[in-house]
Image (tube, rainbow over all chains, first blue to last red; front, side, top):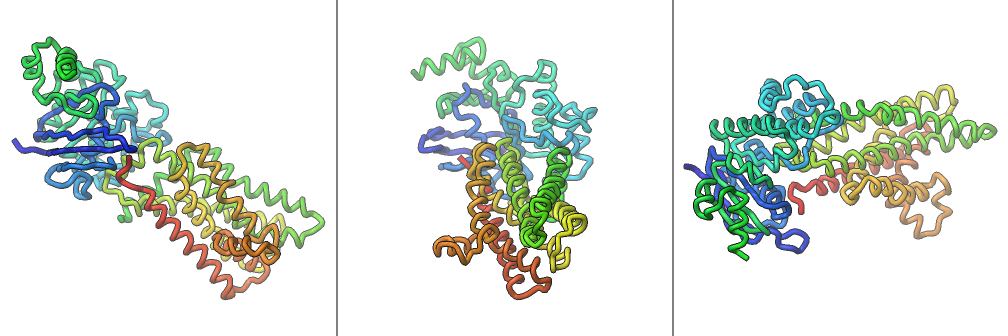
Length: 236
Length: 245
């Protein structure tokens, strides 16, 4: 299996504080990797380093064969921030139309991604009149426009109702099956079972890198939450 | 840079503005109201109205575009859309020129309306042709836009962004020669007024008001305002960093 992402010795310093202390991992193509850990442990910083918007980065971050943030990657990597990055005063279709022009894809992609995130009926609605979960899906749709090879999703399922959450995970799975590499962060441990692989993170370090079943076997825990606790306590 | 992305950005900015009907109304009506007010403040002194009316036509687009751009750009930063855009193939020039195109167009409409009312019903007597007045006013709007874009990088909140108007624009306004002749100022202030771009914007409009022909000095004023806008836009592009803490 090919590696889409290779990270070695990643250190990030923000405002004089080191927030990532030498992180190493790889992401395999066509897999969903979950990045789990408590809020504030450095998940977002790690994701920002992958997409090349994080400053104060040391170490080597290679994405799809190029250095993270290279101009050649901007069409190949999709990034969905935790707070939806869309224009509230534009309609869903206007938002996607603008991002389609920016990404250089044809207009028929707009309809296609709206189907994928189940917003096809709401195209004309202003984004500021939508619910939080709908806005999050508009933001996700903008990242799907250019059919990215790597999709970095920062807490994409926060606040969604269980049915939608299941549908989105089904979408992530179908994207992975089509060859896309996904890195999905969450602080909800029960989403872990839907991933092929898990990176557990705590206080700026990766404390585990394993498949969900491997993690449970190794720690003897019943669920990922238990495994996380076992690892954290063993480290203390 | 790509023409497709620049045009798409300009259209997007204009669509957003169109959704905010009240702002559009304020942009178009306030200059007309203020000019009308001034006309009757100087009811008995039409010569004074002629003297300050022209420069004011240049100042309205400068001030409004300064404010609108600093708030719009701050919103792009705080809502995360700027960071999102910078992870796409969009170039910084696409964003800057997209904004310049959109707000330049708004300034064109704003100045045309204000000039039409001032030169028509209000009886403002300017020596220059209206087209020249509108041209200088649009350049002033772009200068205001470029300065607003720059300063928005130093504001964390919309409160701060709005405070930059008195902090950075009022000193230029006081020293630009509209309130007191620059020759009468303390030498240090006169020097200072010579490096403020707004001085040339107002100076150009004063010359156009008094004398309709494009003299070398008017051309100099136009060039300084255009040059300062380009410089401010170039500096502004430096504030759009892909990588941030």
